[in-house]
Image (tube, rainbow, N blue to C red; front, side, top):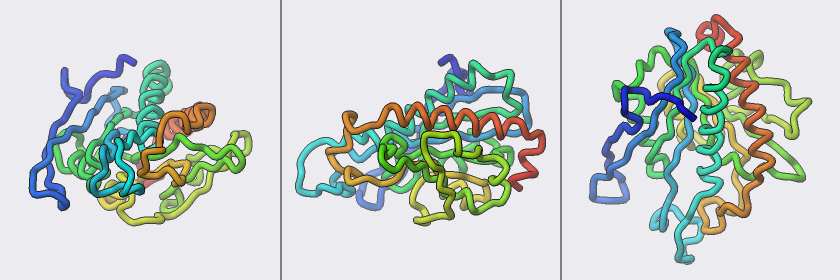
Length: 246
């Protein structure tokens, strides 16, 4: 997709954290790239790429042995992020703001990747206008297609920025925060950065070994990608976006 690293030749930004469920210090790393438009401000696009592995502490199937692949949670979100990064690179001339794409780690253990991004010097956080976070976007219901936009009701500025879904293949439900600290967007909201979690919602396969690729709705992912392209274009059409979401 030919999107440059945030820093010269450095996509990976390693960090360590201490999991409260363990006595050991864990190693992880955020993967960050940037489309540079020479703007003073940036839009942050995030999705966590970690899952729960053999799930000693987080499994919804505690008595089932097997690796939890996390196709929906959150390979789907990473796929959406990567597709948008490639699309933004092709449409760079239409962008008014820098776009920073961050695949975050250690979300499942406690949102450590998002927290590290804010406390590190990787990005000047005062220049982040907003965060668009993708988490579990791969299982759009075919009978009642719904995209949740959690956090969209926390700031009136989003009303003019999110596209009308009347022509979409799904309905967009705008919400306040359902679970405080439930996903990476909550870290940014807690630091005063407007943020939205986009998700197709929890399914019976959440944190189970059945969250695998054959259950993903790939047509739904294409629909969501088209919608998110429109979201990014709407954001970039506002020369005073930082004031609208202040």
